[in-house]
Length: 146
Ligand SMILES: [Cu+2]
Image (cartoon, rainbow, N blue to C red):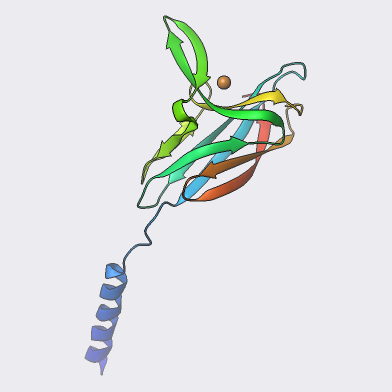
């Protein structure tokens, strides 16, 4: 009887190991924050980290916030030593399977234009990310100085 029990246990473990992993992207978003900016400034910026622990890539295809008249994906570029920023081509950021994409100061960011809300330190502002496969995800971005 004891031997049979062990055989069953081994069988169960083997089955678990062979079970197919759920396919598709598995997106999680961390450290969603916005940089504080003076009320008179017309623009603000949001930053975040996207992780995909799934088995296929997903793509960030849109950003929106009720705090902005318009939100765009931007990247920072070095033009002959002058740092400037520009909209990301196609307004898309791919997040590869098993990959991490960081939107951070000096790099990619969500540009909030025609600001409708005050980016005041210690407050929170809404930010929605739209992924091609994972759909919409809503966040409350912490507004802080850096
Ligand atoms: Cu920008």
